[in-house]
Figure (spheres, helix red, strand yellow):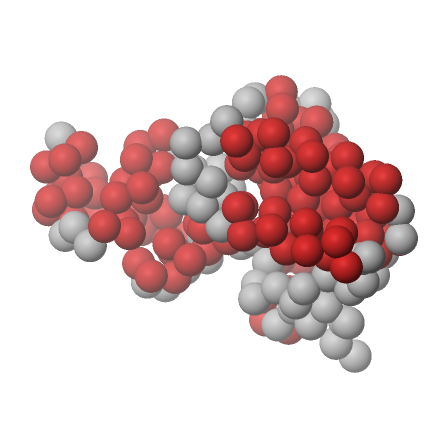
Length: 208
């Protein structure tokens, strides 16, 4: 049976595999206190929320926000606060949802580029005004399989602009082959098969 929030089966299975692998790696290497693992907790929170396990989701989002704060990863922290607000609203806990919304709004105000996080904040605010209710149906879960490097992030930020790979290389002072390698890694890490899909997936988790 499909969950009430309706994540596509393919994307859901993909996310579940990634979260299981990430949690196993965290346990095997004792990475529980590493801020870079915040995205894994965030993804686990989304899966729990999708399945209606609000208390589990809240715990995962809280942990994701705490770890993201340690490494000053504002996009992941904001996404975690908004996820917490969704989970709290599912429980009818408007106080926690309002507090999480306020924290997310304050963080967003300090971000030069918020991407789709601004839209997500607006959805949470509408749900709060309407008294809660089921969370909006997502298009797909986050699909990052591992952290992007600084160079990969630099290439990613230029992908929406329509520049060719040669032009991206010139802008970043990289060779054509290096740009191709970074682009392949970006596609793999974002579970994308095209530039447009990579940009869409990056925006869905606040990387753009």
